[in-house]
Structures are given as structure tokens and as C-alpha cells.
Length: 215
Image (cartoon, rainbow, N blue to C red; front, side):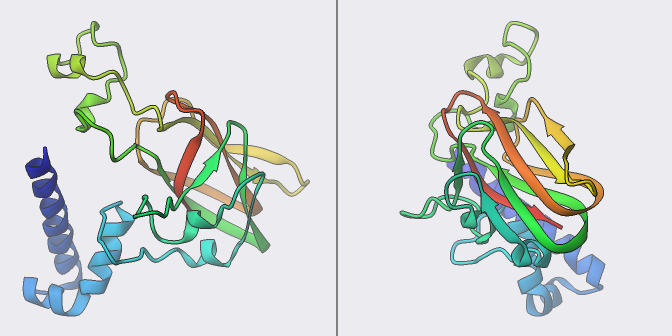
């Protein structure tokens, strides 16, 4: 498992570097020499872990007023999208708790980026194919029958609400069966405020969110 994880990490870095070099018209060496910082940010934005590096948070996210119904929401925009040492780097929420970005004036939002808790320290089979959406006795691969489902810590259901011109909260996105740690949601809205509301996990009492960006 460790060998596969290492190979996957190297493959992601090599593929992203190649695509970046092509986009910029650079040779492989030129990409390393001239675009290494951008490459690191692209990898971290895709949820790669680069020790001793901090992901750059979007300007819209960094400048907004951030509040929550309970707990400290600031880890959601600290650029560290997983536990590191003694630091949890997460906002912990009960179902129906909310966390809100509020802007000084209406802002256009086109993308939401979220990182949920997939329990990176869990034991056993952690490959994506081990997250079946149907029971193991309904034709899924035999290997998946060894897995009990998504990690209990993963946020299963959540919704996004935006404040409309009349001052009412309107649902702009919703997910009832999330299996992903990194979630990107495209939206097209202009608002003064936007909220994330976790509704349920796959079994844990607390929903943990490592990052929430608005762009």
C-alpha cells in the first residue's frame, strides 16, 4: 500500500508538472526553474500533501468575514488541509451547524472547494474502489466486498446556502451521498454571504471540514 501511494504521488506530481510546462511553453527543466512555485500550488489545490508548504487561499476567501455557529472556523482558510502533528487544522461541526463567509459588498462566486475528513490514518483498504455506492452483494467487484463503506468521519450530506437580495437564505448546492474528500462545486451567483451546513456523516458524531474556499 505504501509503495502504491508513493507511486501515485509521484505520478500526480509528474503529470501536473508536464501539463504546466506545456501550458507555459517550457521545457521540463524550465518548468522546474521558472514555475516551481506555481506547480506546488497546483498540486496542493488538487489536495496533494507537500510537507512544509502552505496552500495559497483565494483572495475572496481570505478577505471575507468568517463566522460559525460554534467553534473556530479559521482553520478552514489556513492553507493546511489535513491534521499535521498536534494541529487538527479543521472546523468541527454538529449536524446543522453552519459556517459563513460574508462580504462587504456583493461578490460573484463561480466555484466552491471543500476538503472533508476521510480519516487518513485509518487502517485497511483505502483505494477509491473500496468506496462502493451499492451493497457488496449487488455485483460490485469482489475486492470491494472486503470494505464496509466510506470512512465514518466523511461528511455524507451537506448543503450550501447563499443570501439573496431580500435577505433570505437560498439553497444553491446540495449533496446527499458524498464519498469524496476533495469536492469542487461550480456555481454562478452573486451574493453578500454564503454558508456551508454539514447535515450528516457516514457514522461519526462530528463532521470535520479541513478547507472551504470560495472563488
